[in-house]
Image (cartoon, rainbow, N blue to C red; front, side):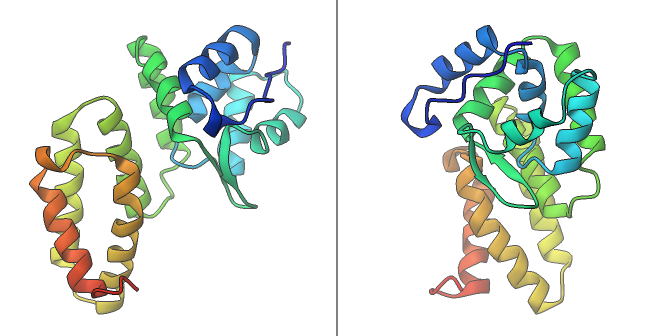
Length: 196
């Protein structure tokens, strides 16, 4: 099996060309495109995905992927793929709707234990990438409804911190979603001008 060429540093290259090279040269590409659906890759997701897609592969592949330049960050709990690379892989996977749905179901099964904000963030991110405005709006309204029902001040501040960190990465267009403005107002009210 060909191993991927991870020599180029992801931030300095064109994601399209980088993914082209992976698709042509790497026997791991089907595994990588499945992992691209997740906002973060935890060890059990990586292990189960490897065993599903490449059941005869060696466990060392997991370490190679974990510490590859295609990951923008990693720690003992998870690694995170560069957005441009993940988005390009998901775009290509989406061309085969049956494979996309199958991969999405797999990722959802292995991330169902996540906290609600992380699940919502993953759903919104994929909807933004797929230009599915109805699902994006539904996700934002789900957040707003949760905020309306939350009475604990500490929990409200935690939600505000999450929203502040997650919204920029979702790259939704504010002109399409008035909910973004409402969420930004909520952040300002909950965290104050310092954003603590």
